[in-house]
Every structure is written in C-alpha cells, then in structure tokens.
Amino acid sequence: MKIIAGNWKMNGTSDALHTMITALNDVETSNTVIICPPFTMLGVDGGRVALGAQDVSAHDHGAFTGEVSATMIAASGAKYVIVGHSERRQYHNETNDIVRAKATAAIAAGLTPIICVGETMDEKNDGKTMAIIESGVRECIPTDARHVIVAYEPRWAIGAGLTPTREEISAAHTLIADTLRDMGMDTTPILYGASVKGSNASEIMSIDHVDGVLVGGASLKPDDFIPIITSVN
Ligand code: PGA
Image 1 (cartoon, protein in one colour):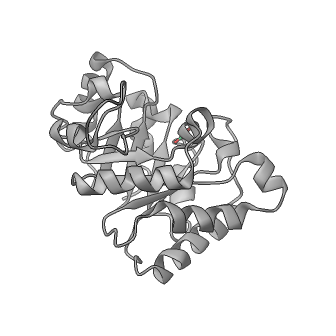
Image 2 (spheres, rainbow, N blue to C red):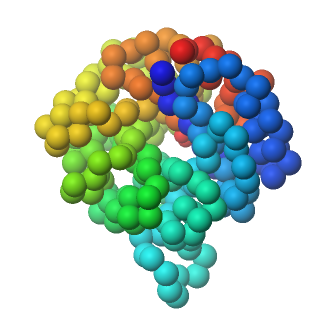
C-alpha cells in the first residue's frame, strides 16, 4: 500500500475538486489518496479521498493577516498539511526552523504534516545533496513527533519535467530512512516528489524506501492522476 498525494498549488476550482473526488471514489485501490487544494476549497467531503492543506501558520491565532491556523485546517475536516514545500522556501523564505514550527503547530492540531526536504540545483552542483537532505530531516521534524510524513523533493526537478536517476532517488531515500531510524522514527512514510506522472510512477515506487509520491502538475486532472494511483497496489 502506497500514499499518493496531489498538491494542486494555486490551481483548480471547487467544481474541479468535486469532479476529481467523484472520479477518485470510483477507483479501486488500497492506496491512501490525498488531495491538497487551495485553502478555500477545503471543507468538502472527500469520501475515501483525504484532504490536506498546502501550508499552515506556525501561530495558533491572532493578528497574522492572511494566515490560516492548524486548528482551522483541522476544523475543515482536512487530515494533512504540506509544510516546507520548495515554493514556500523559495518565495516565502521558509527555513528549516520555520518548517519545524509549522509542523509542530500541525501536530498539535491533530494534522499529519507532510514535511518536504530537498536540494536546489546549486546545492546539487556543489555536492551538498546528502547534507541538505539529512539536515532537512533532522531540523524540520519536531522532537517527539510521531505521525509525520517526509517527502523528498529534489527542488531542481519540480515542475521541470526532470527526474533524478533511480540511483539518486534510492540514495536519497536510503539516507532519509537511515536518519529517521536514528531518530527513532523508522515507521515514517517517505514520499518522492518532482515530475511524477503515470509513465514513471510505478518505477519510482518500486525503489526501496519510496512509500508513495507527492504529485504536482499531474494531480490536477483525473486522466493524469488516476494512472498514478492505479500504477501500484
Ligand atoms: P510536479 O510538482 O509534480 O509538478 O513536478 C511536484 C511538487 O511540487 O510537489
């Protein structure tokens, strides 16, 4: 059983989400399926599809215009929240410390954070991939956290149609699994994300320590997303 999560980013409509949920509820699968639409589309019944948010405030409540708290997200019925996505790090300067604070808030509200780590192209070219991944895992996961998901997202490959080699994915996921074991969190699922599509999903999910995928562009339409879900059992 794998975890297949879709990150809609700032795309879609409530109608499109309804269409997606209806289509996904007809799919026979034992995989866990999650959709993370924009905040305004949460609050609907996903049936067997779990819903998640794409970001969360580190604060509980107060004068933080534009932010949404973990308690509010949980009250919408969502079960998950993505934290530390590459685009949050790039456009909103989120650091590992901020990501850990957000993950802490999510866990306190009963949400499962999907914590993203991964290297930029510059970091890759500088030979820092493994160090960035390991520090990401160690610094973003709150102490004593139990239910979290880690997503390895090579930032240079997101939305670029690029995918790392099988060996690169395997090395990254093995490092994450080893680090999680060292932290006493060896049952934590590890997702791969960046340019996942129907044609590469089953191969990627056949790699050791790849417990599922976090999908961007290919999660927007049922015709693209369903083949990813049905590519594995
Ligand atoms: P992509 O995005 O699948 O469009 O590359 C992945 C992500 O940002 O999680």
